[in-house]
Structures are given as C-alpha cells and as structure tokens.
Image (cartoon, rainbow, N blue to C red; front, side, top):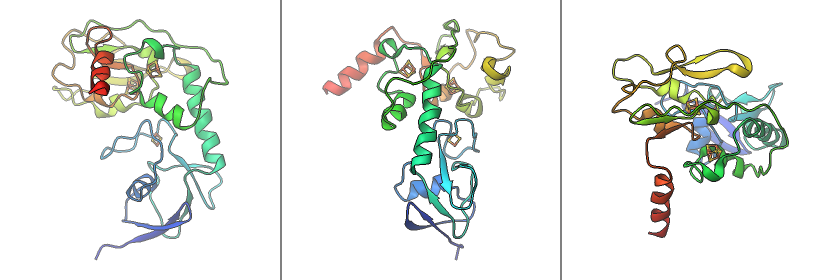
Length: 226
Ligand code: SF4
Ligand code: SF4
Ligand code: FES
C-alpha cells in the first residue's frame, strides 16, 4: 500500500502521497490557493509567489506549488500574513499594469483581475513605472501585448512549438526583464502556427487570438444572454 503523509491544513487533518506539493494536497481537499504561474502536470515555475502559505516552524512563507508535503506539517493557507503578502504582490502587478481593463478583450475572464477581486483589491495603493510596448500584430494567429504581461512564464514553459524550439524565453534584468521571442524580435508571420497552447494559459491579456476588435466581448455577451 502506498505510504500516506499526514499533515494539517487550516486546522483540518489531511493526507497526501509522497512527492505531492502543499498546493496539490490543498486542492484535493477543496482548499483554493491562488496561483498565477502554476500549470498542473508541468514542473513548478515559482515566478509569481501568489501561492505562498505559512508553515509552522518556517521563518519565511513558502511557495506551496513547489514545496512537498511532509509528515506532521502544519499549514495555514489564508492567515492574515499570507493574505497581506498576496495583496501586496497583486497590487504591485496592477501598479505596473496598463489601466486598460475597460477596453481589454480579456476583461471579466482575466485571471489577474479575478484574483485581485478575490483579494478585495480595488485601486492599487502603489504607483510604479509602467511598461508600454508596441502591440505585435504581424502574426496571423496571435496578438501579443507585452505591456499586459505579468511575467508568470507560463508561455515559456508550456510552448509546444512544432520544431521543438520554444517560441519564447526570458531576457534582460530588473525593470527591463521581459518575455521575448528569439533575440527580442517581433513574432514573425508564421511563428506558432496551428498551436495556441500559450494563449490558452496566459493569465492576462498579453497573448490573445487574432480576432476583430470586440469580437471576444461580443461572444461572451451572447454566452451570458444564453
Ligand atoms: S489583462 Fe486583465 S488586468 Fe490587464 S487590462 Fe486586460 S482585463 Fe485588465
Ligand atoms: S505573456 Fe502571458 S503567459 Fe507569458 S509570461 Fe506574460 S502573462 Fe505569462
Ligand atoms: S503558483 Fe507558486 S509561485 Fe506561482
């Protein structure tokens, strides 16, 4: 019989299997920990830090998406310290994000906005420099707006481009850090054809299918109307 690992999450006794992360065990037990960079079944990315939790005995908060469960662990996923940390992280992301929700085709389905709403974040407290990159619209299937990128790196990890060469990588440092194509070239007209894995998992409006302006909003309005 497979070994069970017993631990406590939010004062509830739960168990996991060897190799499972705190995030996975929490998920199996109906506890929702927010994530922006996690992709189920792929190696953890560890970029967004939104999945942090408090573990008894640890001096710092730990990332639940990459920390394996251990026997006797005591975890709090929504303590005041954890919530305060997540709020600051999201507020900082929003502070450097364009104020474009009203005209964004991802409005209402954007994971970043949903997480901000769950954390009861209204207007961000911080003002920071914003990135404004030109929208890349040469590609027939994908529109790229790096001003809206939250650098979760999901697109870098999940890319299944036909030639096996990832379409995207990270480049530069600090404020200039950016997800780039090749040596920071615009997407060519052919790149990534017939594959939209990265578009599907992008949590913001940085990667979108090429559609007519407002088409996605119109489709969603029809779905809502039934
Ligand atoms: S990606 Fe989300 S947060 Fe950014 S402008 Fe669009 S709806 Fe707003
Ligand atoms: S383009 Fe989208 S998926 Fe890629 S790093 Fe930026 S936000 Fe994440
Ligand atoms: S989900 Fe764990 S660091 Fe992003």
